[in-house]
Length: 79
Image 1: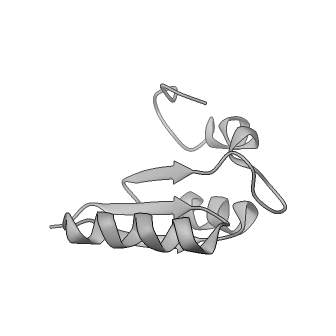
Image 2: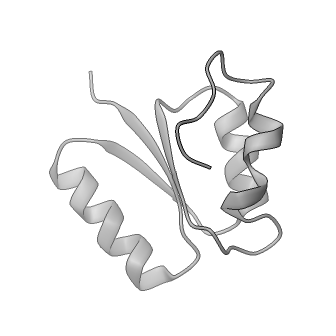
């Protein structure tokens, strides 16, 4: 079973490049360009890992740690 990665990146060129690379390494990767939509998708529990851009529309990666505290059992290593 392939690991599922949520990729949140609003730069379309970089997002596609990263998604293609991760898929070539056999990761099932879903690209989001909006931080709030990405958080909602991650909250559904469908992903094993999330990779976040720091600056995105509506909600950036730096705003994620607080809402995630109620969803994960361990603290994130990086925020």
